[in-house]
Length: 214
Image (cartoon, rainbow, N blue to C red; front, side, top):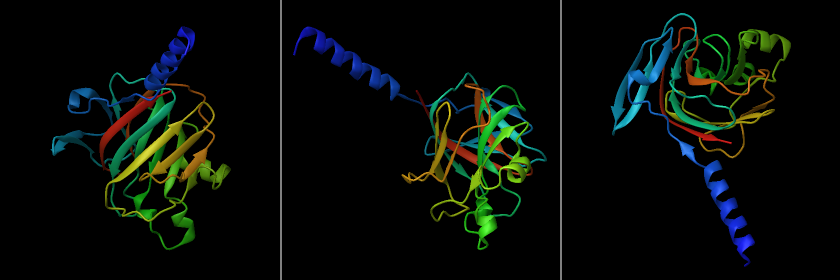
C-alpha cells in the first residue's frame, strides 16, 4: 500500500466513525428540558432516567436543551396506554418555536384495533402549525398515517427509530427492518429543536434517546 493510499484509507475510516457516532443527550435532570404546556418528572429504573409528561388539554412538548438536530437517526423508547383518545405520544423535531415543528407520534389504542380504519391510524406525521392530523387526513388521506406492521402491546414500552434526510422520513418500531411509515416531509426546515411530544389530553413516558447525525 502506498503512503497516499494509507492516508486515504485512514481518512475514510475516521470519517465513517464520525458519521456513525451516536450521541446520548443528557436527560437526567429537569434542568435539561424546556417544557411547554406540561409538567415533567423524572424517575430512575436501574439508573436509567424515565421521563414522564403529565396529561393536560392541548399538545405538550419537552424540548431537550442545547440540541439543534438536522438530519440523521433518532432513537428512543416510549410507553403510552391503551385508552381510546387519551394517548398520543411521540417526538417533535426541526422545531423553530413551540408551535412550528414536525412530529411523529403514535396512537397505542389503535395498535390492535379490530376495525381496519382505526388500525390504519396507529402512527401519524404532522407538520405544525399548518398540517395537523385533521388537515392531513382530509387533504392527503392515508399518506401521512399508517398501521403498524407488527403486533405490539399498547400498554408496554416500545422502541422507535426515525431516519431523517432532506427529502425522506422513515419510521421503524422495535427493530423491525421494514418501516411502518415512510413519507416526504412537508416542513422545509432543515434543522431545529427536538423534544418529547404528547397530544391533547395525553400523558406518556420516554427514555433511552440517542441521536446519530449525518
